Amino acid sequence: MKWTKQRLNNLFFIVGVAACVVMLFTFDVSFVELWQHLCHAGYWLIPIIGVWVLIYAINAWAWQTIIQSKIRGTGEHVSFWRVYRLTITGYALNYATPVGGLGGEPYRIMELSKDVSKQHATSSVILYAMMHFFAHFWFWFSSIFIYLALAAVGDLPINTTITTLLGIVIVFCSVAFYIFSRGYRKGLVVKTIRWIGHVPGLKGWAARFQKKHAEALQNIDQQIAALHAEDKRAFYRSLLLEYLSRIVQSSEVLFMLLLFGIDNGGGLAGLALTYLHSILIVSFTTLFANLIGFLPMQLGVQEGGFVLSIAALGLSAALGIFVSIICRVREIIWIAIGMLLMRLP
Image (cartoon, rainbow, N blue to C red):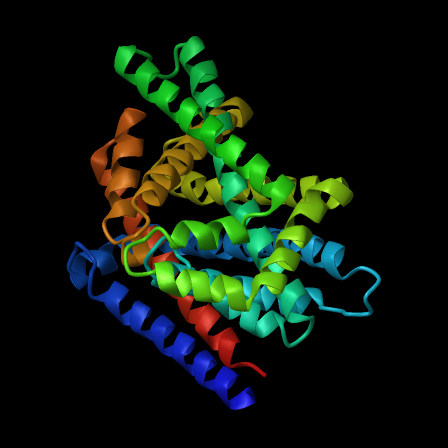
């Protein structure tokens, strides 16, 4: 079994390394232009890349909150550093794989099961993945009201098209809230396997898998439902931390706007307004990227999202291209860090 896990670890490592190579050769600009953009960023690259140390720490804290809730009273223990490493590596693999970035979850389950029971590892990883997406929807939902508030004071445009789009996002988020609420009350794993059974060619596999692992799947669903029903404090703390990580992530775009001298007049008020613009840019871009998240590393999707969202705020498309390129460089660097962490004992 150890050899099998080691082979899987090596496979994940190869996927991550391959992703770095692919991303390096799929930039929409030449290496000369890429170097010019990096030189333009200069010392600002330090906070742009460094802020992710804090973002991943917040993500790890959110995940550890769920893990501690699951293993309380069992005698099992996982250190924060261990969770932090798996958080970075998991997201590195998510950047590298298609279908919404699902590569990191199997790896996290495999590695975390070395410290806790397989069911606790599986339920905590699934719960954290659910919380990660749940926080995304709250981030997108709250961004609508940020936009409306800025439009009300005349800072941003509002028209029929924009109002319609915002309305669609409200409905989209509301449907997601309903689905997540049912998932948190009754579990989601068994229903997911049943849904997979409706996919042509997978009906037989789904039926066999559900029959073979029926008890384990039911136990995992019970643990998922137990977090919200029995430990609401851990549930809302994890949700708040995941939401906070999106707010902190927006500072990455803020740094790039300031680099271009975009500060809305300067001062505390100007900086606060620029930060709100950064939140809206990240919100729209992540919404756009997740809607088309089946592409490996979301190639082209993230770039288009940045260009469109920045242009919607009345800023130049050139700025959008710069932001997307620097963010892609940051992703490559953190994928490489994640792969290095994977090789540590």
